[in-house]
Image (tube, rainbow, N blue to C red):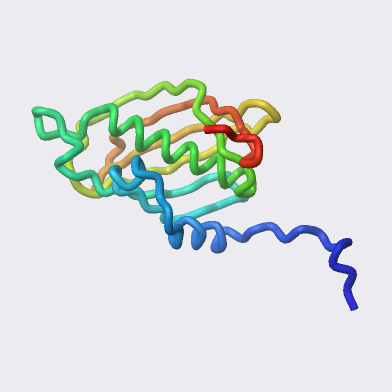
Length: 155
């Protein structure tokens, strides 16, 4: 017989985290608006790959995806990477973010990568990148976030 109290808590696999996001019943409305889907989780590299379906609702008068929505997509990439880096125990509200835009984004599929460059006790440094369906870089961002355990988060 095994003493359950002395066993190490089981960490989640990449596949289990991916399933948790994929099967979530309650999704943030902002994520839904952006057409967010998580594609790949890599805890070892503290990285996630995501996809967005950018609809015409997100366009500016030039029929391009408005830059604020691209910032929101990058923020989503980097925030989810923080959740993964924490072992799904924390959120990481963004403290600041810098975005560089390289080319206009059009409605359709946009892929993103978010990663945690450094995870500290009180601050996380993040990076994000968005590409169009042809693999061309649309925008990049760096940010800082404040890791906060779910139990202490008062959003």
